[in-house]
Image (cartoon, rainbow, N blue to C red; front, side, top):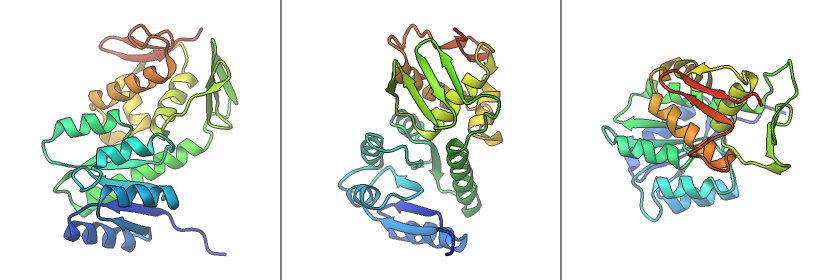
Amino acid sequence: MPAKRTSILVADDDPQLLRLVARNLEMEGYQVQTATDGQEALDQITDEPPDLAILDVMMPRLDGFAVCQRVREFSSLPIMILTARGADGDKVRGFDLGADDYLTKPFSVGELLGRVRAILRRSQMSGDSPHATQARSSIGDLTIDFAQRLVTRNGREIILTPIEYRLLAYLAQNAGRVITQDLLLEHVWGDEYVGESHLLQVNINRLRRKLEDDPAHPRYILTKTGIGYLLAAS
């Protein structure tokens, strides 16, 4: 039986851009689904989840932000947001809602394919267990089970996106040690993201909201101002 091809959903109300993106992804061997509005994209994700969703911000019925927010209620599906160049607020909002990456228009085919490969690689790595030295890490009532990719606190499962899990897992692997911002960005996102401190801060804040009783005064994920972050060892 042939291996199942990686499937990608592309949602955009611009028919020319939609055809361009879909054709180039298909030429790379991906199985491509398309949608021309946000509701159609959400329905497809619900009925037949792809391996990656690429969502334009400005779409009829539901915009890309609304789709991202709805999907995050039930899935950790990798999501890439397409934004207009210079719309920095869109990037911040997308990450706050749980997007894993963004791409600004206009973009080159090479940049698109590179981002797609990177986000799929991160997703696949999140599903594996690179922590051969330990199967589980516990800090207080927080437990990270690397073998099952399961995070619990007081026995209650905490649902994380692939990026959030990779970030927490790397901090847990180095619990008690300060990890610089650039090292975290390089390990979790890749070399091309070194220097994107705001991207890291947004995801740290999202993790804190899920893990901490009082995110403004964290007990697990601590900040070393101007240096980086650490997961408290105890």
